[in-house]
Length: 119
Length: 111
Image 1 (cartoon, one colour):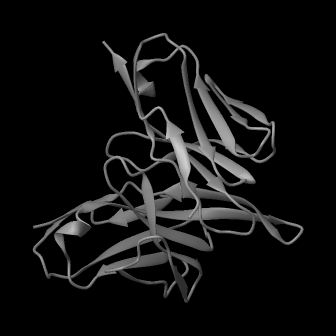
Image 2: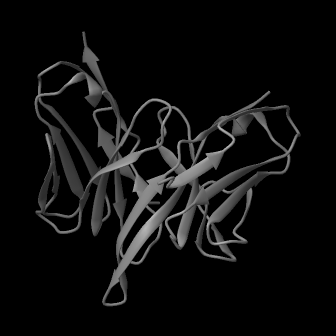
């Protein structure tokens, strides 16, 4: 049972280079998320998706783009990497349940993370 | 925007001691979640709370959903070395897919 898989696990970029982080989930979850984690700041949401073909901005979206072409995959792109984007990136997908038309449960499951350094 | 205050930031404890940590918010939440993150791994769900006043246990861990719906508490009894890690609280408001996260409590066990 793979759950949420992130690739790569580590990456070093030079300023201005581009790259794509891949997230894959095998739990048939509709919702997926990309976070970054910096020391002492917890998790900050970059972008999220509530279904195939849809994406939305989170708390810190600048400098990142995402795509959700297939339900099981959520890609995070950096077009021109900057040192400020040095961080650990986590992908998550969520199990959701609704009650009386409202979101009642939203349990997020995380990948192991991608450690990115931008020099 | 909405914020969660999680305290303490870090704890140094002896093996066998009980641990308490909490999160408070200026907003009302309808769900509180507690996660643990081991070094080099992603957060893993420990306990989910859905009702004000709810008290839920998972082994030596017990979490409570505050009556005001603006706070939550996590207790760990008789700590062991594998309890080391960072504990995060997260809250959710109605009909919002996003979670609001605390900054984490780092638990360190003194040898």
